Each structure stands twice: as structure tokens, then as C-alpha cells.
Image 1 (spheres, one colour):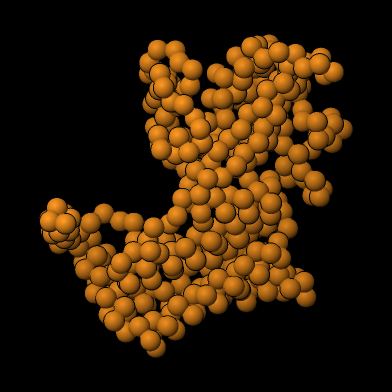
Image 2 (tube, one colour):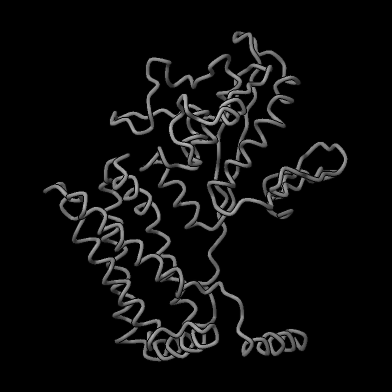
Amino acid sequence: FRHMCEAQNIDLGDSNVVHDNGDGTSASTSAPPVGIFIDNASRDDDDIVHCVTEKVKNDYIPIWLESSPTVNGLNQKVVDVHFTLISTEYHLCNINDVHHRSPQQSLLTAVEVLGDSFKGIGGFSGRQNMSNRQSPSSSSGLHHFYEDDYDLYRYGQGYPNANANSSINNNMRQKSSVRGVVKTSWSFQYATYPYIYAKDEATVFLGKCYLLGEELMPLLINMRGVVEQREFFQRDNYLMLTSIRRSLVNHIEELHKSAPSIKTALIRSSQNSFCENNKYEGGRDIVTILEGSLLSLGRCVDLVKPAGLHIGSVSKSEWKRALDSLEHSMSEIRDHCDPDRPLRPSEWGKLIDEEKGTLQI
């Protein structure tokens, strides 16, 4: 973490470290020039982004606005808040693709609306006006999320109405007394996915298959929106689906034709892994699992093809079947092809052998 901050020219000297324990309590050190917030409670991307943006909005932006000078010509205070998202390339590419193809379901929406609370009573983005306000389920081509609506809708409360929990509504509508313009932006810092550069060919093969499965995430999010009748199917996602299926076909064909040693190693590794975890499923090895995943992916392609090529319509039941096939394919790849797993007891000795070799060098 310190190395990545150094790469971004962030000085962590005398930093204040705040730990969020997820139970309403937190612990911190003395006041600092730079704050480090460690989130111990979030379990997925939605929770993480929401937690960080709320922390910045409630604890930092009011202080920054108070200490910033008034900008001449605007007669108001302005602060720029920049977020740097650090993760593997496939993860960040997925976030970016979802933001452009399915903006209503984008994680970055929370960053875009971060400054709305400081624009005045009933604060809203400069990109819209009050007459444009609408439900997230609207069929209009443009969908605007107000900060209050966004929090309630995304975290399971539904669109705000008179029956919404009063304590939640009151909490959502607590506005800071500090007003000003908050400009938000973000950038990505990529980290290389390591397993496609491993020494072991079987690990490289699994890593490539795992990446193909993860690259389907923007399509999964889009199709869930289609099934829930919240957005249209994106042609770009269909083209990506067919491309990934073709790549997976090539990987499996290569495994059968020109890489028998890798196939043998994969079967042996998967059998050992399943047996030690009591998961050996009726003789299914990794090759059988990949072929089943490919079959589900092909079924998904066939079902959504009319919509993807704009040559016909797809019924609601067919969309649901396509989504089920896609989810099955992705879960199979994620569960059985991820090289990032705990070591089996039989592999512990290899670490000692490698360590001895390194010491001798």
C-alpha cells in the first residue's frame, strides 16, 4: 500500500489511520495531514465504494470546503476530489465497461453524485433539473439518480416513498451546512494478474480461463438489468460474449490436441483438490467442468442472439434462461479455475524447498 501511495506522490508521513469495525465503532490515532481509512466491514464492491464515499462526504469534504478560498467569478468555494482505484486490470476494466454500458448499475455513480449534498437545499447535479427527476425504473433513455434515491434504491430499500423507514430518510436528508462546488474525478491504477505469468503451465491455463470468466461480468450485470426490465441489452456485450466463447473453445481444443501434459496435470490437480475438500463430484475433472461451462455459454449465446444482432425479439422467459446459463457458466469457472486458493498440505513442502534454493543462490 505504501509503495502504491508513493507511486501516486502521496506522503503518508504522520498519517492518521482510522479502522472501521463495521459495528458503528472506529479507532484512530492523532490528527494528521493525511488520513488512512481501513475498511474492515465491507464484503463486496458496492459496500466498499459506498463506505469510502460516505466517509469522504461526511468527514473530509466539509473541512476542505471550509478551508478553501472563494473562487473569483463563481462567488463560492470549490474543491476537487480525485479517486484512484487500484486493482487488477480485468477488475478495473469491468468497472469501466459497466459504467459506460450500464451506468445505472455503475459503482462510479456514487462518486459522480458525491458533491450533490453541498449544492444547496434539495441539492441536485448540474447535469439535470428538478423537472427531470424520475424513478430508477423509468423507461426514459436518460436516468438520473439523486443521492438520496441512489442510496435507498441500491441498498434494498426501493424507491423512496411515504412508507420508507423514517430514520433512514432522516439520515439520508441530513445536509451539511457547508455549501460549495465539489468536482469529482477518478483514475485507475492497474496491477497485473500474476497467474498468467506463472512457471507452471497448468496454472497459466487456469488463469487464462478464469480471466475469460471474469470478463463476462459487464454482460452479467447488463442481463440482470434486462431481466429486471431496468435497461436494454447492449450489442457490445453480445459481441463480447461471442468473442469470449470463441476464446474458451480455442483453449479447450488446444488442451485436447497439443497440450496433453497440461491436461493430465489439470486432471490430477483437480482430483486431489476435490478429494481433500470432500468435493469430488461424481468423477468430474477440470476438463469436464470447462466443457460444461462452455455448453452453458453456448446456450446463452443462442438465446440472446436475436437481440444481440437486432434481428428479432427475445421473450422474458428466454432472458431468464439465458441469465441462468450465464450464471452457471461463470460460477463453474470461478469455483474451479481460480488459481488463487489455499495451499493443500501436500504442497507445503514445496515452499520450503524453494526457500532453500533461494538461500543457496
